[in-house]
Amino acid sequence: MNRTVKLITALAAWPILLGACALPFVTPDSSATKGKPTGVFGPEAQMAANNLGLVFASLPGDRVLATGGFTSRGSLDDAEIYEAQHNTWSALPSMPVARNQHTATALLDGSVLVAGGTSATGDVLATAALFRSDGTWTPTGPMSQPRWGHTALRLNDGRVLIVGGWARAYPGPGVPPDPTADLFDPSTRRFTPVASPPGVLWGSMFATLSDGRVLMAGGEDAINGSDSKAWLYNPKTNAWTSARPMPVPRTYGVATTLANGRVLVAGGNQAQASPAAEPPQPLSGAILYDPVQNAWSKIADAPTTIQQGFGGAVLLSDGRALTFAVDFLGGASGNVSAVFYDPATGAWSTGSPIPVSSSNGGISPIVLQSGKVLVVLGSASVLFDPQGTAPAGPTAPVHPLASPQLTPWLVLAAALLVLTLGAQYGQAQFRSRRRPDATLKI
Image (cartoon, rainbow, N blue to C red; front, side):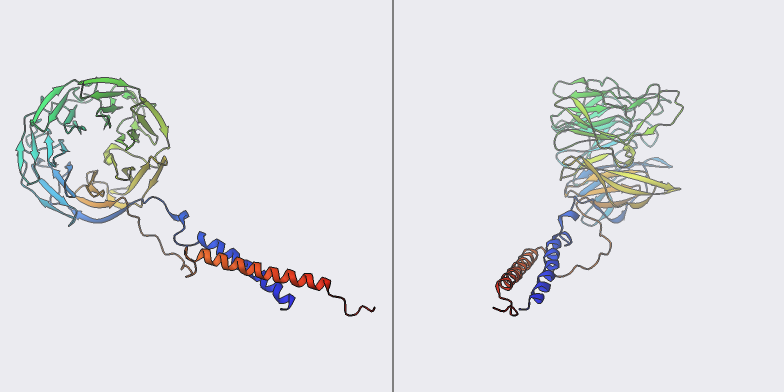
């Protein structure tokens, strides 16, 4: 083969080798483009009623119970059920009593405890009822006092802790919640008064810990503004003990217990002491509480404003925490985005937003058995799949050879070609140096 031709061929093989080596970085399966999904919203479903203030609880079989609420006529006794299989809401038999500002707590046996609230006449209720999966309502014993605006948490042993709330329908401006608590036992269907918390404030954050205790952190009162104090309730000893205070006073943030046992607290705001010259300042900071060490640690700030009014935070099956944020665009419109915290990486991420009306009564996320999350937006809902990914925009076509299966063979073939041609060229050069010059005279 002519030496010039061999040289040109060898030089031309280098782009082939380099291109083959670059294929793994341009293939659709490149690991550089992979990450945890940021979820996708499904189609909307209209509720059977157009109530405000509905309270929700999950049911077995990817269903959700909605109860009570109010209209201009007052509190309502409405109840309806959502079925994810058909993405529909349907009416249920009415509750025994109309309720608003009550709680609904899913129990371990699949029933739901509905407690307290205000009646159609404006009276504060001490009564409660159980909703059974067959669609029936069963009264329970009453709470130790009437309550509305209280907090209900299911404990690890299946009992339900009821904290705070107001016994008076109109307690007056600046009156903090009543510092009392009840414990509901599903086996007896009875409430028992338990140790009173040291002080219940507006906007406190609650979380059930993996060891069975309950964390209560932050909140505010009308005089001192936001608080950083934290407390622990132990149902085994029926006692409240002080925990290490949060690094920063916080009100109306979100709290959820992660799979590793730590508690994520994020968002909310910081109210000033009275008389406050400025409105409450939103907080983007986030912290983790370690119940074993009784210590708080700072983590990366949340990427957007997070509030209790946006539905709180829920724990997903993959270990991430999910909450939702609203970006108000002015008027009655806004965008709702999913916000994820991944404890494995310590990083936050957000999903693609959907437009909503800001006048539709808030956001309520409810985790279903399948791992999907029903997001209720006033009188409508959307099913959110946290493991889905929104479709990407159009991309340039990928060459058929850009395949992870073909890449190793292309690299090997190009390398062999370069080595073979290089060897031939080197051998030809060696021979040319040893061949006598035809013009040399002996």
